[in-house]
Length: 463
Image (cartoon, helix red, strand yellow):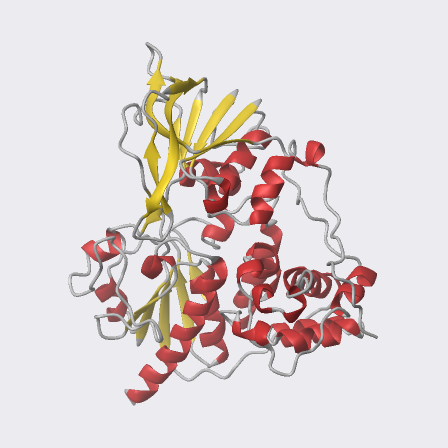
C-alpha cells in the first residue's frame, strides 16, 4: 500500500551537543520498519525520472520496490548491479541535486529518501548477508589504475568483472583516497570503506600502496610492465591558497592537511602518532563541503569557537544544505559576506587573528553567481589561533610533469573525452577530480565506470 505522506520518514541522529564532541556517525540510520515505510512512498513511476539523475544509473524504483516488500537482500543486489559502493554513496552523495531532485514526489512535498534507503540496504546487507565471491575467468590482459579513490575503485570493480587483471597504484599507505583522508568518520565510517575495498580484493584486485606515480614509476614505465591500458584517477589533492599576508604563519593549514591528519592519521585519538594543534578559536575560509567537514572536525577537536568565513551569502554556499544544517546545529558560527585580507601573527610566528572585510553582492560574474564587492571601511579582526584554508584544490603536478604527451588544461587537469575518459596519450584514460577538478564522489564513480567500458572496448580493438 502506497504511503502518501508529503514528508520523508525522519532519520534518527545523535543530539547535536553530544555529537559535536565525538567522531561517531551523526546519522543513526533507518530501522527495518522505517525503511519499509519510506520505500512505500515511491510511486514506481513508469518513466523512472530519478534514474536519469544518478551518474551510475542505479535502478532506483526497482530496488525501492523490493525494499517496500521487505526484500532487503534483493534490494542490495539490485543496487550493486551498477553501484559498487552503495554504503558510501548512501551517505555522501548529494542526492538532493541528483536522483531526489528528479523524484515526482518532490513536486508537492519531499522527495523519496533515496539516499537513506540506499544506505540502509548496504548496511543491512553487510550485517546480514555473507556474500559469495564471484570471480570472472581471466582474459589474460592487465590494466593499471592510478589512485584508489572513488573513480579508481569504480573502474576497478567493473574491469575485474570483465576478466582483467587489475592493479591499483595508491600513493598513500592506505587505500580509499578521499574516502579515507578527506571525509570525516562522523559522515563516513572508515570500516565501511574498508569493507567495500575488501570486496574488490576478494574478487582479485591487487592494490599496491606507497606508490607515488610520477616519482616511483612513470606512466611509460607502467606500460613497460605489460599493462594494456592505464586509468588515472588520482584526484585533486593540491590545495589552493589566497596568497594573502600571513599564510605562512604557524597555525595555518590547508583543509587537505587538516582533514588528513584527523581522518587518515586519527589525530583525534589519544597518543596519535601524527599530531595536530589543540586550537581554541578556528577560522575556516570557504563554503563548500570540505569547509564544513573541517569546521565540524575542529569543533570536535575541542575548539570553543569555530567560524566559517565565506565571501558570499548563504544562498550561494556551495555546501550541501544538510551539511550546513548539521554545522549550525553543532555550534559552528557563520561569518557570511566576509573575506579575509590578511592573517595576523604574534612575535613567535603563530596565528593570533584574521583580518576580514565585509562584502556585498554586485552583478553576476562568469559563473553566474553575484560577484562579491568589498565594502570600504568595514575591516575588522576576528581573534583566532588557527586558520584552515578550504578554497579549492587542483591535481598534483607529478603525473603531468613526467608525462609530456599527456595534455592538461590551464588548471592542471587532464584533458579527457567526457564520454570515454580517453586522453591524448594512447591507452591512457582518466576520470574524476583529476579531470574535472574537485567534484563529488558519485560523479567520480560515474567517470570510472565509463572509462572501464571504454578501456574494455579499446583493448578488444587491439586484438
